[in-house]
Image (cartoon, rainbow, N blue to C red; front, side, top):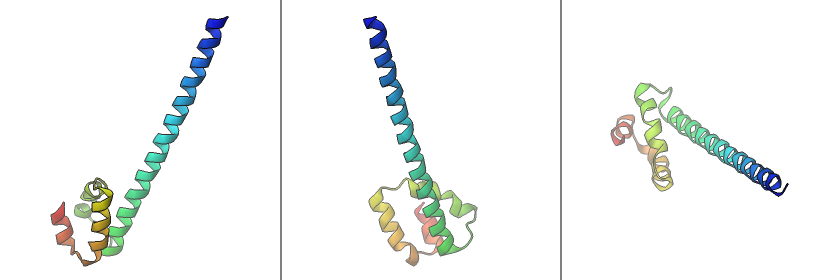
Length: 88
């Protein structure tokens, strides 16, 4: 009897940990999606409809550290399309 109680407790704990892990993954994926949308909208508002070259730099921009990303966003209005593409 004691073993089945321990088993059920362990099973419930594992289930709860799985739920928490799933929630964290969902939050992370949502955050990444929001960041992608932000970058795409910044590029669209600065350079118009994005072409293949601009689309290629979205992932490298997302890989920047928060400090480097913030600096790039602040500089974006002064950068030409060619200058931005040259950075990546």
